[in-house]
Length: 307
Image (cartoon, rainbow, N blue to C red; front, side, top):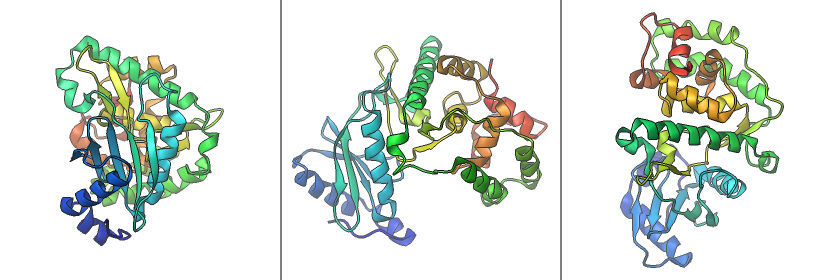
């Protein structure tokens, strides 16, 4: 029911077409024993995701992103029941038609923390970031070895070197102004990146948008979206934490890292911000405070400093 998607042009034609996508999702749900269940597509996400009735979520991956579907299922199975906050349980996963893959998972309770944040009282925000720090510590404590056949990058040092070599070009493509671009090589050369005793399982997008919270009591009720997972240094995961959980609030980040049990040099986290696969400095600058002196050192303190 779903057409092949192997190119950007096919992606742009098929993924937004809800008539095509809904028909395919409906057919797949029938094959999975959920015929007739109401399907509601979530607005967020890079790939199609549907709420199926009240209890399930169906995530679809076209052929060009098929490996992401394998990663999502494997990582969810690996972390199931291992964290202090729930993660989706995998009910079924596999191939569909024309290279499409799917993951049928449980639907977690609660609403998105990003949407709810402004309604959460300060004392409850504090508890939420404490819970987030504890959950991230538990994730990083898991043994990633069973996932090495599906998760990269394999050689963390080589990955960092590759990202470093392309860091300026990546931000230039994002239209970062030249005075900022000129600072990147020197900043990266002068910043030491610590090496943990062993690599950790990284979520890589640990942010309010991927956390759920209960309105009753304002406690975290879920963490989802593991398709971008990697195995690497823990500091890499704190890029999204500083940018999208604490959002430049040093007091909140301080609480989170205390609950996590380890602190990081703000310069190291700024370096990983520049090295991140999805790094987009101009976007972050629109979202967060930018110091008047326009220096990366000051930006590191503004976004990743703690109190």
